[in-house]
Length: 494
Image 1 (cartoon, rainbow, N blue to C red):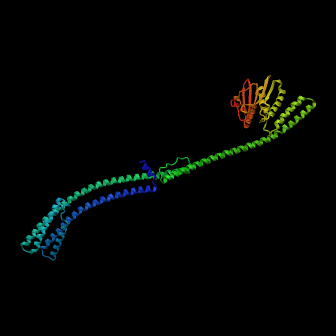
Image 2 (cartoon, rainbow, N blue to C red; image 1 turned 180 degrees about the horizontal axis):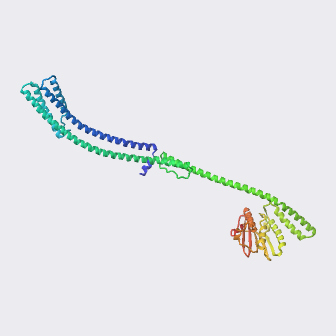
Image 3 (cartoon, helix red, strand yellow; image 1 turned 45 degrees about the vertical axis):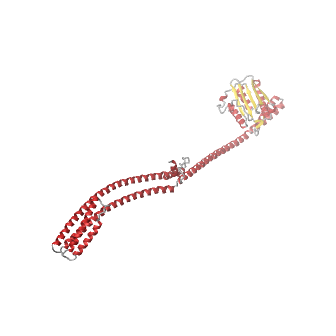
């Protein structure tokens, strides 16, 4: 059944339509042919009854006419003989049509027809004798009454035959009526069957042609409305509609793929445009920053020149300590004014750290000391500018400022087993909770300074890790290079 259904679906629409229309036309012609056959059978049976009735009544009319001319024959008049003979010939002709047929007639009718034929033969013999007898005398009268008597018998037999024919006709009419009723029921059944068949054909036509067309039209409406994610059409066969549905599904897939590609491209272009706008904004901010930096360099330059003048006066006045402090402060400002340098050797960064600590030791005295142990082989290693001084300044301001004595800051630089440069700045100050470092206020210098160093180290391929224990101290670890120790707490990136 499934194979037959699949073959039907694969047949072309033209073939399907031809088959279905052919079945409908054949059904209609079958009904018409059946009705015509029934009508012909009815006409044939009716003709048989009517022919028998016409034959009998025709004979009766002809024989009655002959008897009328017999009455006229016994009264002399012109053309009586001729008309009487013509009436007899007409009766004989009618009699020939009434000849008995053993195969076609019923027994009773056959017997009556046989009796009529025999009576007519005897009647004709008597009639010949009557016509050859003169029209006067007792013999003529006797022959006349003999003919009248025989005519009465013949008329009686004929009426009996007519009654029998009418009875048979009534029976046949009943049979015809019964057959007609049966045929009517059969015709009604055939009509119902033909109607059901046409309904089935219309259903098949609807499922095979109209419904796929409707689905195709609905899918086209979805596409025109911009709904490209509608489910694909069901491909029911390999006919024209099946191939159209398959092609439509392929077109829908291609349109959906193209739309998604265009949407993705639009998103990428939008993202690229946003990045370009962001880059333009950053460039604008950078230019503003550079302009502000150039403006800010005016006062430091003036301060640097003033400090150089103060150092020269201290040297002339014989104050070497003042001269040394002023020169270190001047060197510190000179280092900070070199804005074009983003990366400096590690040795120069450590030298700046020593100058800074000389200035701080003048202020704090023996309360705070600094130990620097650096591998000389690492002095030329490039590091981001100003990564050590802010760490030492944080250690002094937030860890050792309240210390009355014994404050110590240790700076170490070395190369670890992975080849990275590791610089540690350790103090024995009050320490702090590193979990609160990221939540520090925006204006707090520790958070801002550590965040700035962490970002610059990350940009340069390194990292900053801060570990602190309240009441014990703080250790800031800078890793320069690709390899980093992830066991340290990264919370200090701020």
